[in-house]
Amino acid sequence: MISIIGIGPSPKDITLRALEAIEKSEVVIGYKRYIDSIEDLLKGKEVIKKGMGDEIARVELAIQKSLEGKEVALISSGDPGIFGMANVFFQMAGKYSGIQYEVVPGVTAANYGASLLGAPLHDFAVISLSDILTPLSEIKRKIEHAALGDMVIALYNPLSKTRKKPFRESLKILLKTINPSTPVGIVRSSSQPPEIITTTLEELHEGQIDMSTIIIIGNSTTYIEEGRMITPRGYVVRQPIHSLSREFYEKFLEGEIVEGPNRSCDYYPCHKHPQNCTFCYCPFYPCGDGSTGGRWIKDKGVWSCQDCEWIHQDVTVNCILKKLPEIVEEVDDLKKKKKELLKLRRECIHETITNN
Image 1 (cartoon, rainbow, N blue to C red):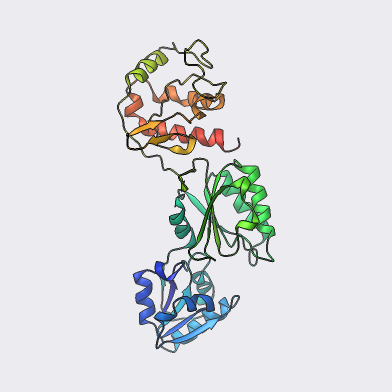
Image 2 (image 1 turned 180 degrees about the vertical axis):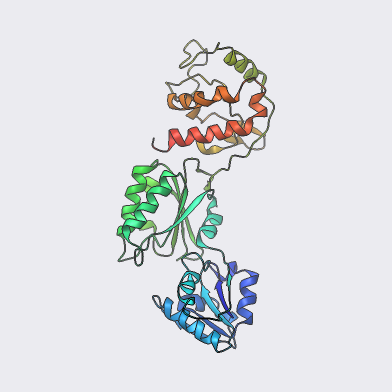
């Protein structure tokens, strides 16, 4: 039996299943640095350490030992199926018959990095920037399409002393495709404890990263709050419709509200001048989503829109008006159809923020 095991990013993050698989093994094979990190688990076992670039040799040796009747552990860091030894194993396993195997998953770098940053992952793509086996044209194509799809992007193997071009080319594509102010999280595991940095795409630079770095690039809804990087999923925060909001939307549905700047209002401008007042009362309130500047007033249970100017921009109003009449046919739909409204909000955030 060959157990293809992911040991996670550090010994503290190894799973119980991985521990059990290592314990039952007689032979342990892996990259020297990974083997050294679990040395205390390997007493009494035959340990074979190989260098970087010897992946095929490791698999062949694991198969040979298994065919001799040994219980073999083939070690990967992180998860063996994400840029790990499982891929190599299955590439070579077809040469042989009668091989028994199991793949033991582990915590991969994207999950580990995300846990230290906050909650940045929603729909996301994991892309390696190593061009040792992958043509640069393929890496660039994947980066572009992930960015166009508004995916959160986790970058593995971003940069080494001799391999800088894939990172530089990828950064150029990202800066052309998505908003330069998009939040970026950086976790450097070359230092202990890991160094954690939050920045923006336009501020991301080579001096912040190395081969032991995971980079997580947010999407159009990702924001940073109190040092935490968050990509909201859009859950509904329910609250009664305020009486002033109800009065406003009764007039809205009758076509009696002022579109554009309402300079006759005693409070104009509420936010930065100029502003579009079509939605004096936000149809999404409370969104509970800080990506456009709103926030909870701590210990009050009140959602504040004071710093959200997104709803008062012309491009935002135009996007919302395309579909809002289909959703809100009566005032109570602001509550009853909140999920549909929040999906409209996300759609308009992507349309208005991504390339601005």
